[in-house]
Image 1 (cartoon, rainbow, N blue to C red):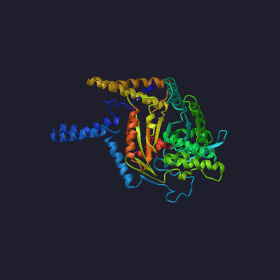
Image 2 (cartoon, helix red, strand yellow):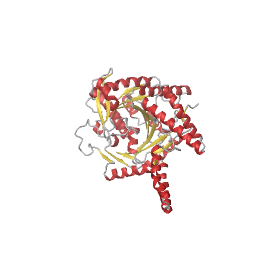
Image 3 (cartoon, helix red, strand yellow):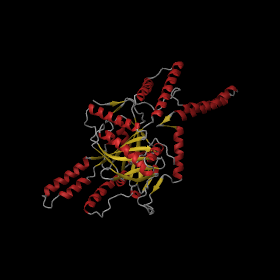
Image 4 (tube, one colour):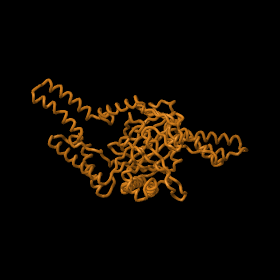
Length: 502
């Protein structure tokens, strides 16, 4: 029996026949010249102004693939200006021979403002965990690599329990009044066989029979083609506006902020291991995070890095770490419908929640690569609202729902079934907030990455088909492919809902 979750509603409900306040204001102001022409009885001018008003209404009200026509126009102008100014192209300092400091982060696009700091010693191993600072967005973040058994073979009871565990995790994060967003990132790539090849080299004996060697080689090749490797990351994002005062009480500076983040990590780790059933939660150090970033941009580099790490066990002089100056791509280009980075192309698409509800575990087809060399990634983000903000928005939503129902009743317009369902969810939201639940605006982004020798447009269509097969609707992130790729592949706390100060 599938577990269906449908307790979500639109972020905003238009109170005047579905129109928001700014849409109604634009239409009202733009209609004034037409009424002036009617008052002056200049009928040819009335016809021209009415036609112009109708065209403006189409541009402002009717959405086209998630945006209004005016939104598309603004985005297209920004992209054209960026292309002419060559802002959409990135060439790393190392590729230009200017990487004087290897510890300095050199990443493209929305990641350009990120800095990585080593926190104070933490835990029994006294590890210096990576503290992620986004100077453009004014946020601090930490990332953990999580091992989870998955819910593919779980029954309905276990899925209900883990769904409740996720709800408890978000409630705990919201009650801290510090965590602004929780990001869950999953990357699945075809197995490269690096660990198995290393194990065979270490354990194969020179006296082994040729038949046994052949059987093991054939088995390794077959298993590598049929297997996928999954990487799961959890990132906690805390804005500077929330952590600043608390950090001063903890000593101030980077150490003070790190101590606050360490406390949040302990709370979240308990929820991950408990209600969500994670078997391992490892908070990443700077070298481990650099490795995750490098394999995010170039999935094919992982096998060589694994060999270097194994070689370092016998020869300590081997440098197997990835310096931050080389963790990003040597070159990246932001195209209209895809993102190009080094020898790879990627396409990102947002996942729209269906009206009939979302089944737990239905996203499995989205994360399953279909061809050799293909990588699928998925970001599920949970932006958290403060309790005061959530209460105010709930009150505004109820007022908008009441006003809309009243206007429809006066106009004799019958309320449709979808509108009745959205109104009922709006009224139920205030009850849940009163019981102490957190309010979040979740969103999801899926990406596919393939070598440049493959046709990226074809793999983009396959990704859209996988999203539809899972029961969701895809929305290609045209003109924002770089941000979608960074959010869904690079575990550095990039958000698509937070505006930067850059």
